[in-house]
Amino acid sequence: MKVDVLLGLQWGDEGKGKIVDVLTPRYDAVARFQGGPNAGHTLEFDQKKYILRSIPSGIFQGGKPNVIGNGVVLDPLLFEEEAEALAAAGTDLHKRLFISKKAHLILPTHRLLDAANEAAKGNGKIGTTGKGIGPAYTDKISRNGLRVGDILSGFEAKYAAAKARHLSMLRALNASIDKAAFQKLEAQWLKAVDYLRKFNIVDSEHFVNGLLRDGKCLLAEGAQGTMLDIDFGSYPFVTSSSTICAGCCTGLGVAPHNIGEVYGIFKAYCTRVGGGPFPTELTDATGEAICSRGNEYGSVTGRKRRCGWIDLVALRYAVMLNGVSRLIVMKSDVLDDFDTIKACVAYSVDGKETKDFPFDVEDAKPVYAELPGWKNPIGDMRREEEFPKEFKAYLSFLEKELGVPVSIVSVGPDRLQTVFRHHS
Image (cartoon, rainbow, N blue to C red; front, side, top):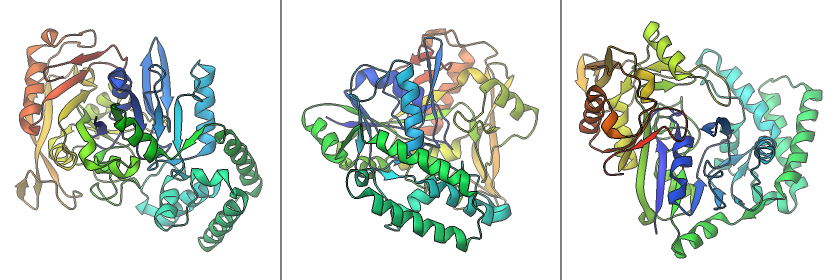
C-alpha cells in the first residue's frame, strides 16, 4: 500500500485540517510528518470547532492510529493542553495516538531564545509565533537537541545540560529573563513531560512501515505550506522544516517509492502571516473584504493574515516541487460577492515577464488575468452540477494553468461543505 500526502501549496493556513478529517475514513492511519505547535489546524463539525496544534487531524474519525512522526517538534506543555481539551470533549488519545521517539522536544528555554533572536533582528524580524520552533529545529540540526525518547531514560541530566547551554546563549544575546516567570513555566513543562510519558511512545519509522507491510493505507499530513519550506520558500521568511512532499519521507521514515497520491491544498485567494514578500498582497478595501469574509485570523495565534489574489506563479512552483496529483480548492465561498476575480498568471521582474518563481520575489510585480465573479452564494451547494457557470469556469481556468485536476472543492468550514469532483 501507499502513503498519500496532503500538504499546503501556499504560505500555510490553507485548511489542511478540515480535508484530513474529511479524507480520513478512506485510510487506515493518519500521520503528521513535520512542523510544530505553531501550525493550528481548525476543524468544524456538529456545530463545534476544534483547533489542533500537534495532534494529527484524523484523530476524530474512528479508532484508527494517528502518528506524530519524527519530523515534528513537540512541546510537552502545549501537547498536554491540547490532549486534555480533546479528552474533555470526549476524545481519548491514549489508545489511538502514537508518538515518535525521534521527534524533538521544544524546551522552555527555546521560547526565550525565539524571543531573543527575533529582538536581535530589529527591523528584519521574521515574525515567528514565539513558540520556540526555530530554536528547537536549530538544536536538532546542530546535534544538540533532546528527543521524546530521551524522557524515558536519563532525562534529568540531558535536560540540565541543554538548559545550561541555552542560558549561556541568552546571556550572550543580553536577553533579560524574568526568573519567576521562567521557573513557573519550567515547572509546568516538567509536569507535562510526566504526562507525555503516559502515551504510546514508539519507534515510529518501524510502526509506519509495519502498517504498510500489513497492507494498510496511510494519509500523511503536512503543516504550514510549500512557500514556507526551509529550502524552497521565500527564505529567510520561512519555517524551519521541510514542508514539501519530500519532507514526508524524512519526517516519517518512508521510502519515496511508497508515496502515492499527493493532494495539494490552496485557497481560492492567498494569505500570508508574518513578514516576507507577498507579490499579490492587497492592502486596500478588497484585501480587507477578503480578510473579513474569510475570517483570516490565526487559529493558534489570533494574528491577522495578510490577504491577496491567488498567485499562480507560486502555485505552479509548488505543484512542481511536490509532484501534486490532485488539487483541493478551499474557501471558494469567500469570493462569492466579487464582480471580478483576479489571478496572478506571471510576474514582472526588472521589466521582464516570467512564469517561473524567481530566487527573490521582493520586487516581483504581479501580472493579472481577470475572470467574472459568480455573484452567487455557494456554501449550501453539495454537488458540482449546482455550481454557477462562472465558478465552473474559474475551476477550469485553475486546472489549465496548473496542469492538475481539481478533485475537491470546499465551500465552507464544516466537513459537510465539501464537494468531490471528477477524478475524485
